[in-house]
Image (tube, rainbow, N blue to C red; front, side):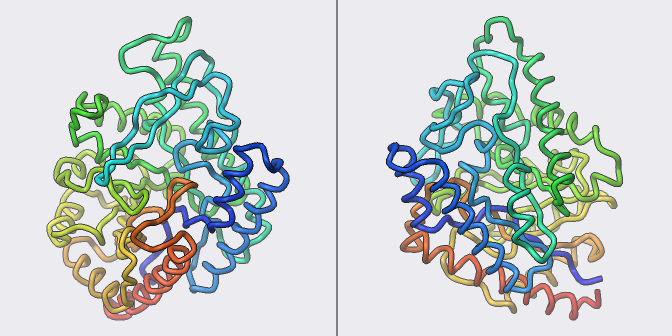
Length: 375
């Protein structure tokens, strides 16, 4: 069986779609016009990704406000924010270029999603001829909606976590019911939890263990067979061509990461300085039941990797990771947030073209590596 390969999730939104989102926020167009533009972007995403030869594709999250906020609000500007939330939540991440991304704040219970990933997937399944995957947000990320040092009146943190786990399970189950072949859980907060950034208080509270326990509460609701198609994605962030925690040593995360009872892991690696050391860490800490998809293309870098570079990365990784448990992916979603002008790429449209070239290079490189490794 060839080395498996799949993308993480998002693709850059076309500039035209980003402009429509701004017009919708300003009240200049209605939801039907925005949906039409999102549908067009999804169709283009699926068609172009299928053309790369990728065995499994996605719609690029073109309808989602972001990888983290799609269950909460229609747009990043807060249009359609769920009525149990306020827009003044804590900062989620401070990126290397200085910009920040913020979460909403829970103001009352019970906590419920306003939308599920399957709501988008059901529309995209009709556009695809190949299997589709769907990314969903981890409960650990959404746990940051609850104030760090205050209680929500009449709704304890424990009650919130109970509802959160229920909603996350529902999110995943609905994706499979809607036709997803695979579902991966975005866990970018894992590496960030080891940063201890004094500007961002939650990162200094040793929350990684609690994050993993919360995620396992969801994973444990699925059978071992079901978990084979449920993955965990880790990365140091990727927004406006900048990261938030690439300075955190993977040795601080990986021994803990593989405690999560997922069937496979999507691990940022193309952007790492010492890849071989990380390959060894993965081989040492992952288990025989966990498939490890290593990142072989870097969405933050506009330079397109060659298939030969992808092949070489996988062949080198196979010295540390058993080849029957080795997979290939992109380091991160190409644009996890719906508004992203991609400064290093020149424009969102240029970044979109580059993304598909990178996906093709990954697919072709995987074929070369599979042949060389005899799998």
